Amino acid sequence: MDAVKVQETDFFISFLIFFFIIMGCVSSAADSKVVVSEYPQEDQNVTDVVTTTTTSDTKHEERVTERYIRGIHLTAWVSGSEKHRKIAMDLFENTELNTAVIDIKESEGHVYIDGIKIVDANRAYVVAIPDIGEYIPYLKSKGIYTIARIVVFRDGTMARKNPDLAVKNPDGTIWTDRKNVAWLDPYNKYAWDYNLQIAERAATIGFDEIQFDYIRFPTDGNTKNCRYSKPHCAAEASKTLVGFLKEANKRLKAKDVKISIDVFGLTTTAADDMGIGQKIVEMTEWVDYVSPMVYPSHYEKGNYGIAEPNKEPYKVVCYAMEGALKRIPERKLRPWLQDFSYGGYKYDKNAVRAQMQACYDNKVSNWLLWNPKCVYTREALKEQAEENYHQESNLSTVEIEMLKTTNKKPPAVQTTK
Image (cartoon, helix red, strand yellow):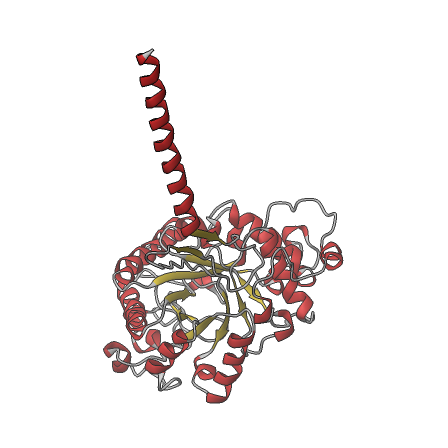
């Protein structure tokens, strides 16, 4: 009988202990509220992913923010103009745009940031953005992601002033392309160092990212006459561009800056280096972002099985994104899209939106818009007020269905010679 009472007492005590533990957990859960927002949809603009934890004792709030990159190209002259700065800022403040890609070195060889001895020695510095040291921090204070665009090997100034660094003709004279622009020899490591000094200076000024354009060998003009500082072949060309990016990674990562590259649109599907040294898989390893220039107007008739690619912006970009995603991670893919008219077909808001939709339909959330005159189609952009929408497309269902056709998968793409 006593044994039974002891068991009952032990059971009662155990029950009480269990009860108070449960109540403590419930009380703690009531005091600690966890709210996790839905992960942003593919077609959202600047979007915060917020996890908030609040306790009655600490009142601690933690915010983890991720955002998509939606940007526009701005020349140095536009960036240095007060009038054009206001126009750009209006877009940044009132649309989904949040990224500025600013030229700091262009193909004629002009450099638009100061403080680089070798640039000054070659008189390559041009005062287009005199207050860039203040302007970049200002943009960043407004939440704008800043990218410094550097044209690497197409350089009409440095190549002419330093023939030893230039691509040559068989007779030893400086080779030039169809627009009479000279090129730096991609095999020459002094040419590498020159561009990387400019990139390092841009990082010091405060740019968030360095974007290398014309990271390739020449394509237009009589390229059969091109002579380099070492024997040239496809394998060596590809190896050399990857080598430049390895060196850039080594030098720039120490400055806590991201790296990106611009590549030909067809690199997303081409089987070879396209005769310019660009192999997207190998190059991607050393950079944070890759921006294929998937401008429909720049594809030849018949590419991807499309009779007139310029008139099919959705299909061209869709095929390009599908190809790219078979080769490189989605997180690194950030294409340049076309916001200009070329080749007889007018690019309005629907043509621009069609390209964006092709990205979203392939789960690609980041993009940049290119217009050589820096005049962008505002109607193609979502307003800031629409920032929190979910599962909403840039186009209506009817528009999307009109863009999609029943064509079969495209045949293998022809690459450049």
